[in-house]
Length: 335
Image (cartoon, rainbow, N blue to C red):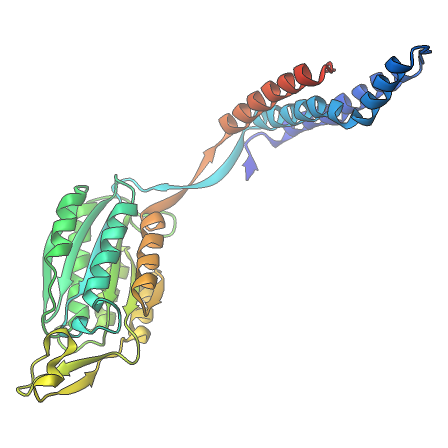
């Protein structure tokens, strides 16, 4: 936190001055003892003195109010996080055949769909969200929109397909994000108000562009890519007798075999690093939900430096009201 007019902070000296004045008045009253001949009255006075600390509550609240008002005069400023203007997030999801694997329940794709739905519900309503899937090639399912029902419909339509073309998927997501952001300027960090969330459960097996070539396009466009490596190292998928994926990972029961389907967190981490994003590893449905909820609450925000004098003024008003209320309850007078 900083102050636009820090020299006005000298007004905080009013706090010790008021405290000193209150102590002086309290000691001045104590100089004039009163003789009590009534024992009941004397007992009540003794009880009152034992509760002496309560009499300082109004003064303490009053001093806090003075401090808050003094700080407000100095025009405090703070760096706050708020939704970026024309903010856009594109969800880029792998729908290769390995997303049928059941090491993440109910399936990898099922867990991803639930997590993306949670993301849609957590991201600010002013943020436009799009959906792009990729297997052998990219498929633009939902253009960036604030209509969450349309986004949920697109998520529900996702089905596992065949290969994995991460680079081509990134290129398509970059184009979609560019079109949505338009001519929005770059921030001080060189980034534009757009981001891509890439979820994949394996290494690239198809495509024209490599994953890092796709990442380079996102970097050059000023978009961060946040990556999620979904799945465990012991995930497998049934392969049917004719070489096709078994539905639900059960192809082996028809005379086929089981094929290991490990995620590729190294490549996904490199993509995030290249674009200034972050990478995550999700080996369970709970974890992938947590990742998307966290991203939904933070990804489309940017930092701004704003004056927050009104916060201090409001706090001073509340503290002053509290001080007056406490004085009324305790019977004490303010300085």
